[in-house]
Image (cartoon, rainbow, N blue to C red; front, side, top):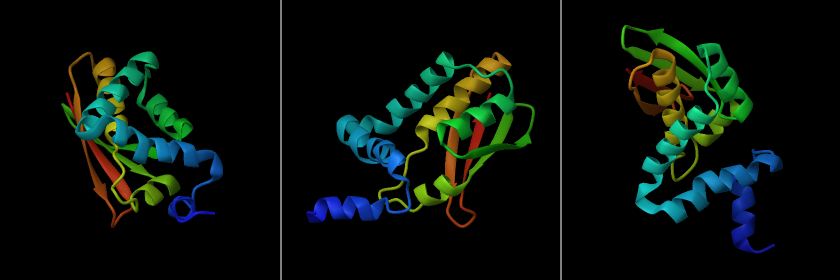
Length: 142
């Protein structure tokens, strides 16, 4: 096996082989294809995905995240126009160790559009990776 393939397998050694293709697509191929527009396009793709598969409750959003293999997301706090979610789980922990860092813009766009649909208001979402707590925190503002 050549060094490049050995490095690829080593980088994703803790990921089941059925998921490696997805990880390579998200972390290497899309950024290579999209360049500096990667985050913007992933965010738009997340919004589009939410329009294709609208969730009618926060519980459905949580189920969708888990089923898609994005991790376990929980609504931690809700204010008048703010929603704070926390994404955790085995895959989240692994993705937080990637170099370059894993982009959660797809998930952020998905959350923004789902809350926009649920609340019938425009919404935007930002996220922050928290390596210490092995989580990603999303803030959706409507």
